[in-house]
Image (cartoon, rainbow, N blue to C red):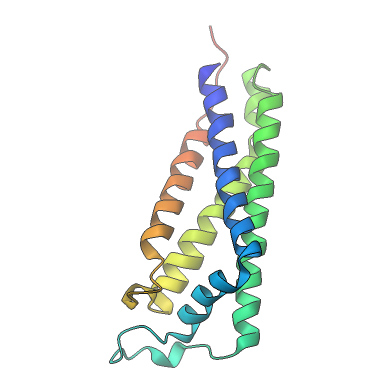
Length: 164
């Protein structure tokens, strides 16, 4: 039972994290928008970098990208909350039922991984050279986030068995 409860709690913790991130991005739109805007404009990366041609200057596209990020983060939160709830409902059920309750949480964690690994680490960090910015480098934070999510995902998908 402890393993099942730990899986519920870890998924709920990821739901809380994504909720707080989305909430912060919505309620402090301007401050957090500045991060996305500077990353996309590539205005704080090394001046001699040869990748400046990748910069996006359009304010419309800056807002569109930021809104997409917020929607994805909110969806991570929703899926993880629903997943944690479904797991909680099946925590005392036979193992097969508990295992069948996992997919929504798995989808939420997978989306979270994609937001922070693909969105921030790969696209922001590598394509837009975010790692070169002293002020707008979100790579270390993104790495912490997606590794934590990945560890919870790996733990969650381990098949649960009925206790003897």
